[in-house]
Image (cartoon, rainbow, N blue to C red; front, side):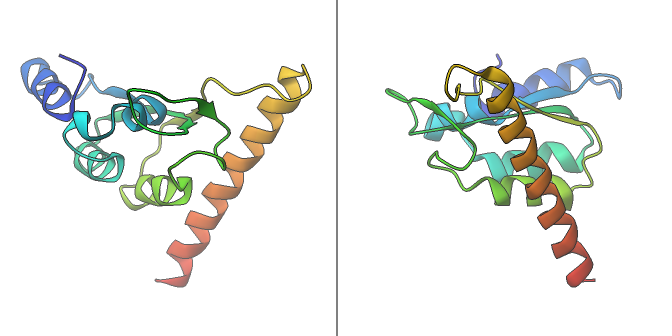
Length: 134
């Protein structure tokens, strides 16, 4: 059931509880591409408007299925700023965490630090845009 937009929608309708939401893995959504039924931005707007996104895994990939490589946030096929802006637009207040981070020079701590810094920069840019358009 958790393999497409319609599947997620149906699962949340069945559960019908304010205490049940989703961990939205951006990378998985990007991997699925057209098979997901809706793109990641539409998905964020739909489920975010319902306050059903509880946690977000930030990850980018080189291309959708059938073949992809996990990449750093700034090196995949998706511009991650619109993703963060969509989360900001729906007033997402959950957790955003790195997911499947590639390793730099055999040092996962450096890779994690780079990714967390990039996420923070995306968030600051989205917040600044919100202030400028107010």
